[in-house]
Length: 84
Image 1: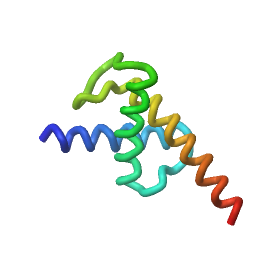
Image 2 (image 1 turned 135 degrees about the horizontal axis):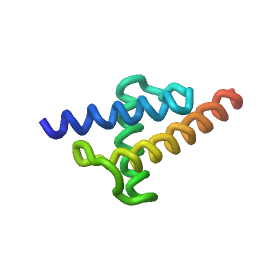
Image 3 (image 1 turned 180 degrees about the vertical axis):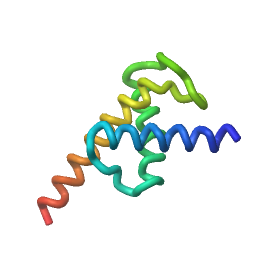
């Protein structure tokens, strides 16, 4: 049950990051989950683990990390579209 909750929290964080930036995460629901989990790792590495914790994910650093990740992904996708 913990793994499923981890995936749900990762998906919500990825979705919120895309919503805050006003950009879609490539890959839909799976992309949101991946962005949330990688964002949690990135935010934890950059900012540490502070704030509320849910399913082993520190929410505030995870959201900041996911926002950074979605922003970088959108820049990469935009530059790839311009080249083709």
